[in-house]
Length: 73
Image (cartoon, rainbow, N blue to C red):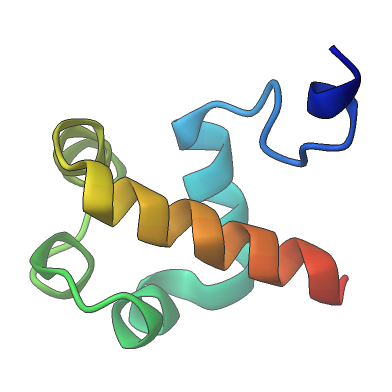
């Protein structure tokens, strides 16, 4: 339990993480930092969430970018 207390991802949904990243980077910035089609070609929240939920490596990249953004704040 103590391990989760210091985990910035604990209690965050993928949608909440993506929304915060969009506020900070917008779609163009996300596409720049994470080279995946759902951020480049007609991006939307629903299509991105669907892809990220099915693709562990892409979700990991989104989570890593979120952690990087959180550390800088």
